[in-house]
Length: 82
Image (tube, rainbow, N blue to C red):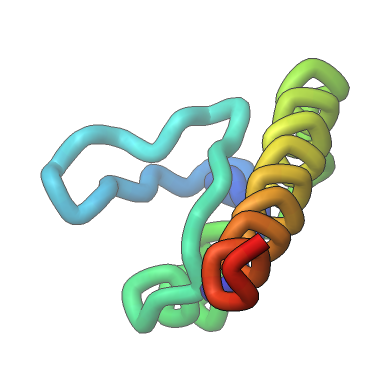
């Protein structure tokens, strides 16, 4: 599922499913029905990720890709008996 960085539109208050307020600075949110409705109603808007969060997300993605590639090689080695 894809995620977007969203924040409340100016003058709007949005609450998460658990009743907590949506962070004013924004947060990553999955493309769920709840989120799509808030976007359509204008309660949420897409925002730029803060640099620190963007760098952390990029590092996590790189690490996950490396793990996947390493795992694939390991699996192939076990099936070929090498």
